Length: 209
Image (tube, rainbow, N blue to C red; front, side, top):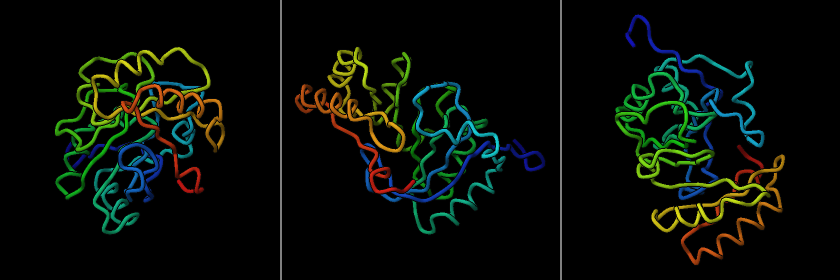
């Protein structure tokens, strides 16, 4: 990356809202939604990242300007997606955000590239496939998104036994949670005897992004 040829980042949207999931639920933040993802989950609830018409190519300066406009005075930004780990020159983007005073969080499936250096201030790992142990160890929180099907309970409980901040979250069915997935998450949370916590996408309940 250079001043003459700055890196262009594929971004869907940059907007301010509250965090609707996990540890920081209810906290106002600016969301930077990356375009594209190396996975192709049929149940993904963020289809915008696959829409070619939604992709904008933004420089770091343009991203910083959009953040300031979207959330004046907000100090927390979230790299989400799509898959932010697949962004080009992710380390340079994180460094620029931090040097401008932002606390940087990232939600990732763990696919698409290496963790940035400098590291983000908060990493939410949302595994969809087997991942290296190093990613689990780097995560500040782990969020398993569960559907109506079963079969992963033992692995989730095993992870919760060794990591202090593990959540289960029901998959969405359209704009609302799948009721069967909600029941499954509730049962697993109770079965864990306090090792798991239930995450709900509260932004969807109140009709905001």
